[in-house]
Length: 149
Image (cartoon, rainbow, N blue to C red):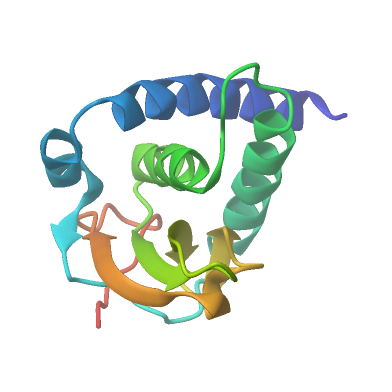
């Protein structure tokens, strides 16, 4: 693994731990830090940040498989969102629900930035979106989106 990716995986590991702690708190305390409720960041293709988005997604997936705590959908989505926020890149965290085969309600979370789904994309189509949290970062030059919608 290249040194750059090793650093990203270490960063992902740290943010996964932090997100796991947040998951243990009441959601009403955590929600304000996730962005603007029921807002979404732009879907516009972000060629400038595309490599960064893919690398963060890969780092989150690599690190989440190696944590000794549960690092499932909400934890990975929050960790990836915070890694993007650190770089001034917009994102949207989605929360969805559905019923499993026995009729039990189950939930899922996933994260999108521009046109790329960083976490949770494999199962997102099975869920009905019940909440979105748009993390819109004020433009800082090259990083981050300038148009939202």
